Amino acid sequence: MNSTEIVGFSASVLIGVSLGLIGGGGSILTLPVMVYLLHISPVTSTAYSLFVVGTTSLVGSASFMQKKLVNYRAALVFAIPSFTTVFLTRKYLVPAIPDPLMSFSGFDVSKNVGIMVFFALIMLAASYSMIKNKKEEKDENTGELKFNYPMIALEGALVGMLTGIVGAGGGFLIIPALVLFARLPMKMAVGTSLLIIAAKSLIGFLGDLSNLTVDWAFLLPFTALSVGGIFVGTYLSKFISGEKLKKSFGWFVLVMGIYIITKEVFFKA
Image (cartoon, one colour):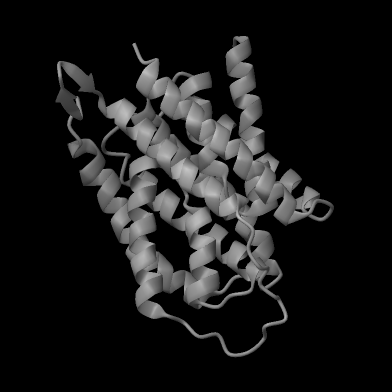
């Protein structure tokens, strides 16, 4: 194992730490780590990301379930359309994307470049949602929860498609949707989001099994390190301000997104 691979495996712990601290951000780290440090193709990396983030989020959601901070009704309404679109996207849409993706003036845009640039754009959107100042949801809201079922289901379908294309769990989209449309307190939104991310990511991964050969000897140890990281992140969350951490992580994601676009568009051989 060379130094780059050691750094890559070490970074897998940070994936879990991120999920444990802020309830999201795992996939934003997973794809660049696999592509740039471990030199795995973007298409395969998106599939591996689904398994890593899905498994890690499932473990993380268990502690929220124990504290009764998961709203199963909201999860179900969001998850059903999300499950459907992520499975169909991974099984049919991603394999159908042409390679090269497009050609103009004698320049070909490959499928791999297209996926990485699209992912970087998602990173920029995620960074904005994490950096911007917003009023905290008050946990003392104990009234009857009012669900906007059509909007929850629509966002579920859109996040499912996003997850299918780039392997992103979509926590930065799920949590605001649960707060706005299901009126969940922030802590319950995070716990519910982890459960949704876990289920739809693992279902999306199932859609890949017929399309690629999985290197389990690599994937299982990498995932185990990430799972260990979520326990660390959950512990650290007791001492670190989640809002400050989220904003700092947002700036990191912004820089990474700009880096990926610059590398893929301007410095690709």
